Amino acid sequence: MRKLIAVAAFMLAGPAMAADKEEFHVKNASGLVELCSVPADHPHHVNAREFCHGYLVGAYQYYDATEPASDRFVCAPDPRPSLGDVMDGYVAWAKTHPQHMSERAADALFRYLAEAYPCKK
Image (cartoon, rainbow, N blue to C red; front, top):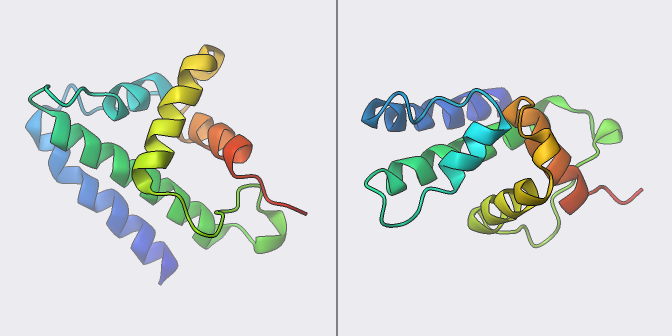
């Protein structure tokens, strides 16, 4: 069931790509940061924000569904941060970690999440 939810989260992001296929193609961390940073006055702001949210939720839900609790290195705090806070935190982190921007988007995202929300063991 959890894997189905993760897949659904990725699929929900799909319609945003129809708005402008070139702008919504995430090749690496830099591309995801660009989408998560589209200014409010940009014509694709809403679609880019929703795509970013879908990517973040899908990546985390897949991790949560497939990673055994004993192996997790990212743990959501209680209360959980808002999606906007996670997105803004990732964008801010990316600005201070440019060496990771050519990595796969999910790899850099989880670098950020591991720093921001480490598991307390």
